[in-house]
Length: 277
Length: 273
Image 1 (cartoon, chains in turn red, cyan):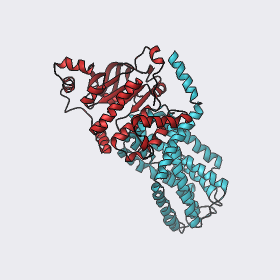
Image 2: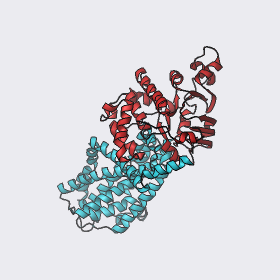
Image 3: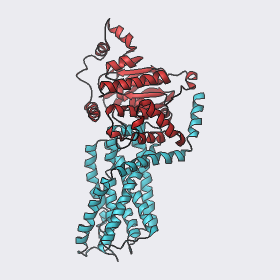
Image 4: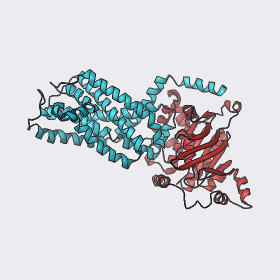
């Protein structure tokens, strides 16, 4: 797997992701409330915030799954509303729920992905092999995914998301429900993608260790707004000496630890956890 | 802009739009076929209902002799109707599977891909058609065992299979549209139950249109199932006749399917919400 550094990267002055006053409402609730944000190429950017803060909604808009109400969102230089198919070619996405098909083998899952992304037939097998090797699942290619552990499924999903060599990866809670070993394996792969291939990654997480370890920059969302953003070190310093990311999180999303988070979010997270066993 | 030029050249490497469309469609259908072959139990459980209808309902009703079925027996008359019914009953719940995929996140993966939305829908419709084919085989077997005079001609059987795939595609795509609107399994189950019986009874599946009161006949003539049954009756049964003519039957089915496909492709993306 070699998502080669695109030659156009330098010629394009734009950011990997650029949001301006992006807004999305569901009925009376403003899930994403006029957020503006820029993410540079080669950066790992973390969106933090309590359940229902609007993180997943933001990712769904950026991945063309959901329409915005107002504002603008550009991904890899393309407008998500105007040029959704261009955007889709440029991005990989791992949803919060486990999205690999359990009734298929790893190989079959990847073959389906390859076909939907128009990877030419002669390139399919070598690329799938490369990707499985990178992700450490080469010897499980022909096993049914429903026999995989949670960590293996997550890595397979990452493989599916990067098979077409996207410029930007969107990961919605990539390590939710994973045991510490599987979590660490996932982190290593993500750092490898960034360091080795200059991959741009936008992820959401509840895990402060994850945010601290992986992210170059973070934004904390609360009730649809970005309440703070910066580097992990900068954010900690802004709260006070010796502050941890937990402190930062508590400061910028205070009073919401018990509220927020729709029933559906919780149900979804539970289901994911159940499937991970 | 340089970047856009690069995009264009890679887009042409991927082949023509038609080739891509077909590839996406077949990829989706192929996956369903793999899963179906890996666990074919569903095909056998689906055989139970048509057996009951033909063996029990059919046998009893053929003694009533009150139903004008032209020059064929009641059992022969209803057999194509039961094939159409079993196609309808399995296809109409197809949306449940799609909602399941939505809950799992599989659907989201499909929808963030650059694949044609219509191809994703058509792939699902074809895989529903595959199930229809297995149901057809079962009904032919029942018919042979019961000595129902079926036309065992290559061309006729090919046309039957085509009609079944088309009918199956119509009702599964209709089901997909409903899934896009209701979005949850609970609501879908309610609606699915409410729809199947009216679609079945307001058709010529087990009695001819002439027997119906005028209002019901008008409804039945607006029901695509009626045209499926009509075509099947002529194509499956020795001595069976189509009332509307094959041209009308297939034209209606094709137009209805294209309308369903267009609608479903348009709203499929909203299922990701």
